[in-house]
Length: 171
Picture 1 (spheres, rainbow, N blue to C red):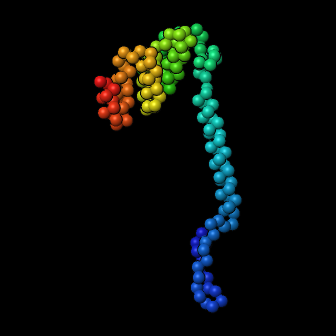
Picture 2 (tube, rainbow, N blue to C red; picture 1 turned 90 degrees about the vertical axis):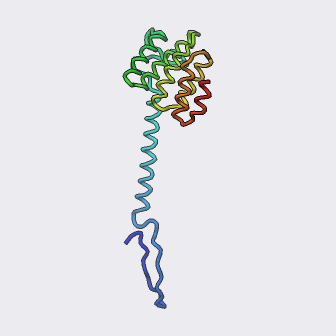
């Protein structure tokens, strides 16, 4: 039997156990082939994942380093599109549209805390707390008096079971 210790008797008649080999027969080759296949599948998945993350929305052309622009839509139109996506619970789509609004607003040198808070809300729904808090921070830099910033941070802290931090944010 493979993988089981065998009992042997030596010349003196003393019974000793022969340790089982870790791999016997074709097992080393099968292990090696399985490992290589696993690495190849992982590499293919990682390549696919990177391509998906960098994929442009359909019908979108590159503008510059800050983002993508579809036709001549304004930042407010992208925000409205993001709101529609959010209502449909397409949070990834909403994030993409709010990102477009943020990028266009930056290009026009008219940043808006609302765009960041809307995107933070979509991140919150996906439980991407770090991204949510990053957008809250960006919104606070633009408009520190915008109340929804503090509400969103408090909700994140509550979800992370850090209610005391959340309460301090609201004060």
